[in-house]
Each structure stands twice: as C-alpha cells, then as structure tokens.
Length: 113
Length: 114
Image: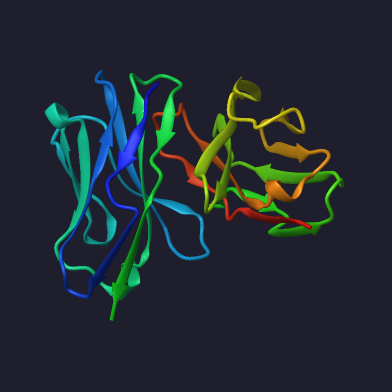
C-alpha cells in the first residue's frame, strides 16, 4: 500500500534557526506532492505544491521544498523560522493522477521566542 | 470567495445519540472529502465523493458511520449510534478536478461524545 512518512513527530527550534522537515513516500510513478500547515486551532492550509518542472518549489511565508525523485523525498525547508511558524505540518502525496491521496502523520513544530 | 463551510463548529452529545455533521464545499468544486483528526491517529481520510458519487469509503470506520452528498453543494456525515471513541475533529475539504489538486479545508467540527 502507498504510504507517506514524516521523519520527526515533534521539532523544537529557537527563532531564526533553520528548518528542515522530512517527508518520504512509498512507490514511484508520477507523483503530485503537497505540504499543508495547520496553525493551532485552525484548519489545514496549502503551503506549497509540486506537480512538475523545477524540483525546488517555493511556497508562502518563505517556505520551500525540494523534490528528489531518486530518494522518494519532498523535504520542507525554511532558512529562518519565526514564532508564528509554530504549527503542525503535513506532507501529502497523490500518485499517478489517480484516486490515491495520502497524508503523512504530521510533524509538530514549536518555535521558541 | 466563501471557503468550505462546516456546521456545527462544536458538538457535545451523549453516547448513543445520532450526530449529523454538515459541509458545503466551495462552489464549482467537484470533489469532496471527509477527514477525522485525533491525537492518536492523526488525519484519516474517511470517504470522498466525485460529482456527488462516493468513490472511496474504505476509511469509514464501521457501519455506524454514513455519508451522503445529495447535491453538489451539500454533504453530511452521520454517526448513529455515537460512541465516546468517535470524539475527534472532523474536517471537510473540497477540490477541483481531482485528488491530485490542492484541497481546501473547512474549519472543522469538534465532536465530543460523553
């Protein structure tokens, strides 16, 4: 079965630290990749997406992600985090433009002021 | 633009009662998804519809759960009878042209079964 894993359950950083959250998925094929963010008490919002083209994708609020096909990975990065980035981050994958869409378990990010 | 609208925002009820959660997707979106979020299990896809037709309900936990989409602008998720382990936040999301497109989420319904 197709699956999505996220390396860290909870990440704690100080403001201005750099961030990298890991995401790996099973099975190759054509993938559409997403990162969603859920701020405390709110719904999920799209942070960025990759469909094709440049494997380095830029999203909102200074986030970016890099698709590495050979590693089945789509890691999220931000050079300098802010307290307001405290949230839960979900990686999600769709395979082959089909009906299979899977969310990862999420990584909780806590940024200390 | 109005986003995905869910009601109620909060529901507290006693076990054994019927619970109905409602969702209005974004106008024009042809896919609608129901998710359940808990601390233990994270975000789980329960069921999704395409053009009002259920496509995959393999995530529905058991027969106590049912979902309908009578028209393009309305869907319900019903639990009957409800149990304390059903307590969770239930999200509805919609998308245009398929699961491979970004999903737009509602604010969720926080359900507590006593």
